[in-house]
Length: 90
Image 1 (cartoon, rainbow, N blue to C red):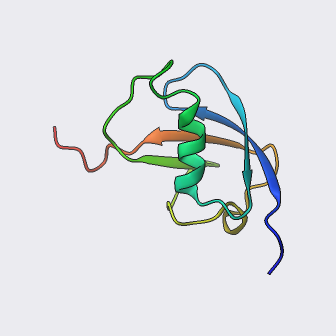
Image 2: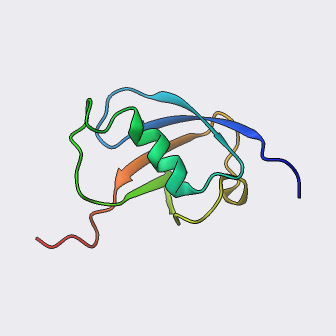
Image 3: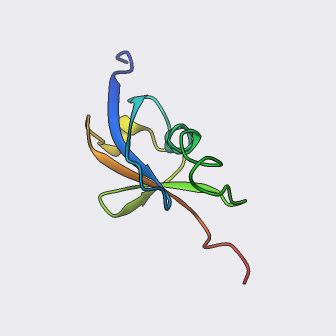
């Protein structure tokens, strides 16, 4: 097993208008990536909501336990982090 590699990502959170560069590693899970991205926007420029977060890469929502390396995400790829409201009641 090799050491985790740095993977800087271009990321945007929910309805934020600021795209940020977030350093993660190939060993980080999508849940960890979502938290890292949200840290810079949620409660600052985007209202915090009581829903789980999901990472979207190339139009595909990724499972929270999938690692950056296993997802095939490359340095400087673009990801979006959205609130997962699919389980929310109306």
